[in-house]
Amino acid sequence: MKTAFITGATVNTGYGVAQKFASEGWNVIITSRSQSSVDEAVSKLRAEYPAVEINGYGLELVLSDNTVNEARIHEIFDELDAKGVFVDCLVLNAANLGIRQQIFQNPLSDFINVLNTNVTANYCLIETAARRMVEKKEGSVVFVNSNTAYRSVPDRIAYSTSKSAQLGMMRALALDLGKYNVRINAVLPGMIKTDRWQNNYNDCRNALSNYTPLGDIAEFSDIADAVWYFAAHARNTTGAELVVDGGNMIQLYPIVPEGK
Image (cartoon, rainbow, N blue to C red):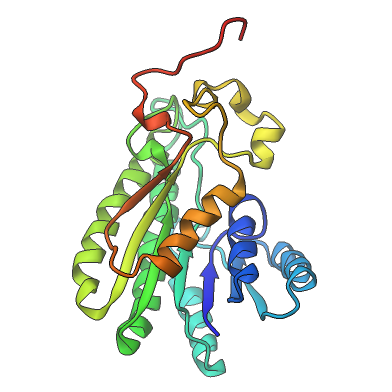
């Protein structure tokens, strides 16, 4: 039975991705910075999908001194090795959203934290997982990226920078790891119906990105289906991007209905 390792998977999109893999018969490993959140999500997933194995780890990607938690990442994969668990697909969903970071207001450490969380820590995870994948001559890595890699929004400089950097890293890794049959791809969501959207955090329900050509924004299952495609079906695809944003990327500007 195959195994998916999904970061930031206790709520919202990450949890939806975990549900998708479990529903398809894969064993699932989830992480979150909070061990209590991991334990709660694991309990829920086990109740939903008793036929597969669900496990989780507390993983703070970046420590209080702004350094990547490399030791913990290695510890987790060493423990999986000891259990005989091979990670067939690594899904990189956890992120520092970098909301309301203003160029003249926030310290450099805030910018560094976003970059280290979204880029450097992900590189460490990939490097650690790929060592195992290379030995087996198979494996898949999927970034849950963002259309903000191409379309900037106010006060999110670090976040947009990190998502653009992810795509550059994705292509470079796809080139270097292709000879080992390890595929690296990225899903680019737009606005998603997360709890932040439901609660209108940062006024996101009034953002122009809600007005898509398809007239709707993504559910968790939409993103999960795209991740699943890369993991399970895209045998001859690497270094690719799949945009799941209702068509926002094709618009010069959103068409807002009258009265909105």
